[in-house]
Image 1 (spheres, one colour):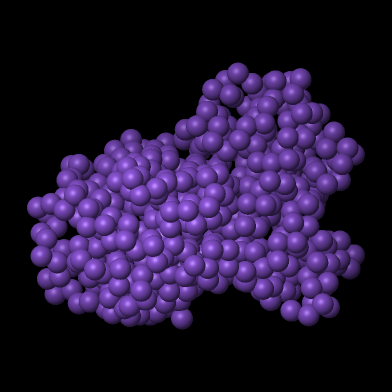
Image 2 (image 1 turned 45 degrees about the horizontal axis):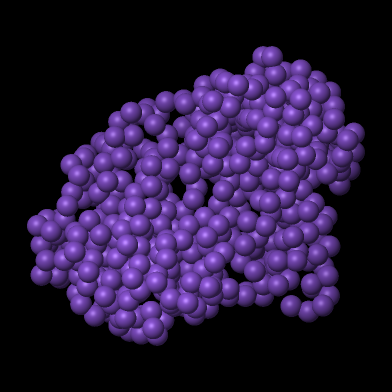
Length: 278
Length: 271
């Protein structure tokens, strides 16, 4: 033990958490168990798939953006873009060179950002701009007071600080996770993932025999995790994150290749798979 | 991995789901390149060291200044008592974890500035954000660089199962720096001799544990811990930073000895 008395030399700010390690649950709980407020209760968050939508080019993107434009009058929204095929390519190059997961995350995030720039350019005349992470975290309120929507990078700003994954080397927090974490932090009204399938199937509808793949219209996140399906239209980690979410207790996965789905999902209609927590 | 495996990985990356088990297994076999293999990451505690002022900080700074001639040092900072005030206040106001992360991060930033002023005359800079790209130059020129230990998760921080305190704070942030750069060592400089069976400041019966694995430590489910709990889970998947040492920065000479590879505190290893 040390000969310095821990209490005599520290310069403390009095607080309910003073001198705590913040790791003793029994001590932390009384100071932090208040209900969390929704910062932007009117916010709609729309995640646009990179590979599922953006990589398909104008046939998929332009009608979707028309739909979003049509919804601007009713909803204020944050549109977050996925990365897609270029992220796969840069993963391949970086893995071949032996680079760590954090480096892969930073490289792939750049690709999602570029997709964001493309989408924002197409919506510019409607007053929509691309916002970098720091602006989304600090000034989203003012931007959405001035404009019906903003576009951002779906990747969370983990980059070099990305977690090493349990299996393999691919960054665990990709754009679906980024969309979810941000949506919950803001206490958003709705979180919609726009993909190229009708929702979550019991097996890959593209690979399975006719009639074998069943669409799950509504499923609990923990149950879906337990089903351990070989492929999912959203990142598995979202299902894990849902367990601790303070506000976002359901997300909807919709097929953005079918006209009208996104509009209806933004209104709260059930058009794809709704994943719920708890 | 062989040429055929390399080709197979590239093909799977372009065609399969990124959660595909075979794809993930193939990425596991890719080589591990250490970016800064000679760097040592040290975390200087906020509450445990910096908040104590010069009695604690000057001697540690002296040791760091001397050690950088022999070792490359990446010095991360903790947050401390002002972050605890901010967390308590923000939690009372009902604010979410993302906001707590942002404001807590600023306190680690202040502590990095403080260490930066003390080491400025020795040419040691404070880096952050895109400044990390210049780390190799700083390490070569002055042997050390200082950074704020909080990971940049901001509004995207994980939400804890209980309450709103950010689960990944400066212990995790510093370790992730060691992991991503493939650093030689990760040393936590705190105000205790290492990891104890309970908080030694409040429990006189607490016993020092000299070495332990992450799995053993998780199984013990201690009520309190000298490092952030989620760090243990991260370490289970380490590819580079498979070992950390927690040492007492109030005991002269331990920083120097830990950098020399001596076991002077608690060593926690991934397996």
